Every structure is written in structure tokens, then in C-alpha cells.
Image (tube, rainbow, N blue to C red; front, side, top):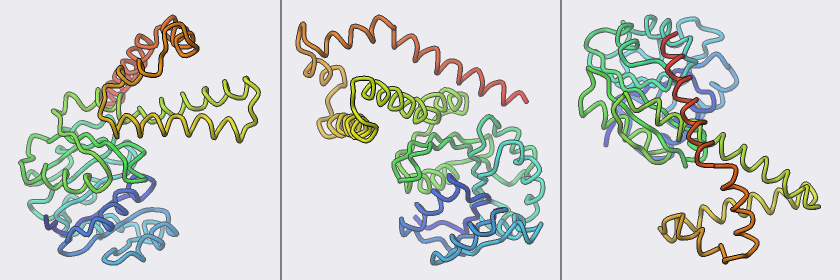
Length: 276
């Protein structure tokens, strides 16, 4: 696929990951890639990549407008509280048939559309932090004015940093509670698992090696075999053995109910953020 000129407004961790994925993919971008950010050093660093032009928001208050001027695809990667003012600022700079892609959590497409010209389509996406190593999972939802072309642009872009799932917008908050927030749940589990390893007498370094290697190996095994995780769990669990004893403790804590409550809390909070 060939993309029109792409602007990425905000090149922090996620915006930078999107840029790296796009550049590494080799996708042809007619008109080049423009980036803007308030972090001058970051803009200077990322602008060294072939085909990337940087606009320094710290030195130029019109940097976002200049980066977006004539762009066919604009990725808005700023904080949710900044997005309305930014869209109002760049509206008259966009190509008439531009696709605006927002990664702002909790900001519905109808709110985004209200701050843009009527000819501009909006696609809302929710990537996650493993996108930084091109192993992300991104949910994509079309706004009312977005067509298949706009969705295809978003799919093509975010496929450069991992897996992509297209959902209806009313499923975005639920998706956020799983893939968006999910890496934090995994990291929290690993933190606590390392603490347990230390409590069994291992050094910090050995506990880290044991836990991270075990988690990574388990995921690799799951991926390589394609087996249901329940099948692999049973293969490790000998009746009356050590693993069964440990799993009985986890079952007694009702891990399923805990995860259901945690993801439900994330969905509720997303709705609260959307309501302002």
C-alpha cells in the first residue's frame, strides 16, 4: 500500500514507536513523514531518519499546523486533554479528504469530529506499550465519517508495530481494559513473582532470571504449539504434585474473579474519562 503524506503529532513513547514501525516497514509514503513535538531533542533525533521532517514545537508555536499541512494521514499522539485544542488548530491545514487517527484514550470519535472539518474522517485506535518493540496489539474503530479507505490506512500503519483488531467503537473501552492496560497487569504479576522468588532465597539477579525466563518461555511455547493454554497447564500439572499445590492456592484466591473485576474497573474508568 502507498500512503499519502503522514504527520505524527507527538513523538513520545507511542508516537515514536509508530514512526519507527512505519520507517522500518518500507511502506511508500508520498510526500514524506512529518513529526512535531515540544521535545526539541527528540524531534532532532527522529528527524535523522530518511524521509522524516521534524517541526520543533518548543521553538515554533505553529509546529503542529506546519507538520499537518496538506497531510493525508495525521496521527494525533498527544495527551487526551490536549487533543481538542490541537485539532482546532490544525483543521484548516489538513488535506480535504484526510484521515485523522487518534490514540487518545477516552475521547470518542464524535468529539474528535466536532473539532475538524466535515470532510475529514476520524479513526480511533488503542495501541499498547509492546508496540515499542513491534509486538503490540492495536484496536481500531471507525468514526461516522470513516470509510474502508480510512480503516485500511489505519490497519496498514499499525500492522507495522504488531497485531491489529478492528472493532466497533463501543468495544474500544473493553479492548483497552484487556490489551491497552494488559501489559501493566503482566508486569505487575512479574513484579510479585520476582518477590516470591526472593522469598524462596534467590538473589535479585537470579530471581529476575528465573521469573522473566519462565514467563517468556511459557509465552513462546504457547505461540509455537498453538495449543490452548488449559492444555499446556494440564501437561505441567501432575496430580498431587507441586504445581497442583500451587495452583490450588491461586484457585482459592479466585484469580478469574479478580481479573474480571480489574478489567471491569478499567472499563468504568474509561467511561468516566470520556464523560469529562
